[in-house]
Image (cartoon, one colour):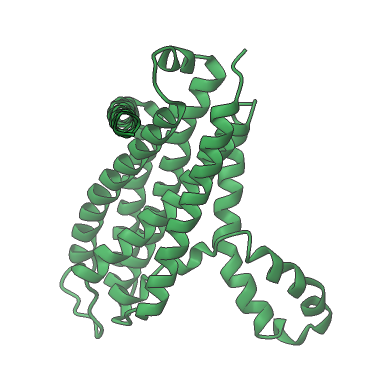
Length: 285
């Protein structure tokens, strides 16, 4: 029984090594990709818009700049994850260049998980750089104007960015799952974008219906059962937005942060499991 255990450990070791090699290759490709450069430039433009919006705001310029900047940063991270999954996985499958990677004696799961790890690292790098630049823009927004309620670009601010990174990771995992199934290269990015919009809108829709939809009984009776069903299938990504903490000094509850983080990791694990199973059985003709 010793030999099978040793063989299993060696197989696991080689699988992990292969995964990190695919991740390193994906990181290099992601940084060089034009989509990364274009979306990263868009993120910088949005940060500039945040700075200008703060300067043009008659009251609370730093709060306005931070709010606009965080929205732009979150949007940029989602786009980056969509494009990276598209370039590193979907496009390789569509062009059949994935066959060169799978021609070696490596597990298909190592390729898929390695590429997703590359997306996570690239996304974290982008969030760090843009977060640092946005923090500088917020500090200098408004010039010498001293607003009544100060904003924070310290720990609360960076925790919010971690929430946005998890948000983008969930969207990336869903897009990766779609890429492992789709036969048309642009479907994953379209479905991923739709998923992102739906996930961010779910919380607002549930809250609106829960409050009675402004007295519209027919609307409540029509959509309440549907939303209650959807909430068990679609993650509520709005729960990963904790921007009230650095903006207004209102920290989220530990329960909310814990539940939201657990939800994100559970959904990522589910999507990756489905993606690996489907990709392992897929035929590349």
